[in-house]
Image (cartoon, rainbow, N blue to C red; front, side, top):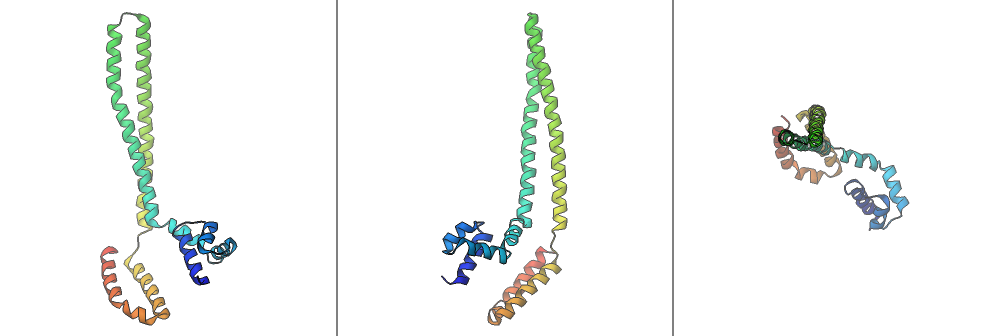
Length: 190
């Protein structure tokens, strides 16, 4: 395998597959130091980090946090709904039992259930605040990461300009694609 092909493959393994230098060196049949040099000199780490932190990935992580909080809240609400029935049963037992010691024990259980319900309700308040915070983060994220059609066209023109300088023939083959693509982009990035 030619050195440039090895380097290109190593770049792919590092930035896309998230492999480490030793593993890449083994796969590409080069020294680990060589891969380390490519990573350092080629700024591959910042490229990989940027790919990991792309807006879609970050958006998914934020949404997952919100979803997890919502599921946790629902679980707590299910628990809270069970307390009134349990308390009602214990209160009925208190009225029916004549033994004072058992009554005290049942009243203690009732008190503990009420306290636990109160604590769970507090937890839902904190979860609601967390969900609100993450929803605000999500809204800000959408605002901050909105790509305008102008910016999209600017980047697209830069890419195809570089392609044209690199390979005029390939560039010419992409003209229809460029036209169709920009029409589609105009619908997405209104």
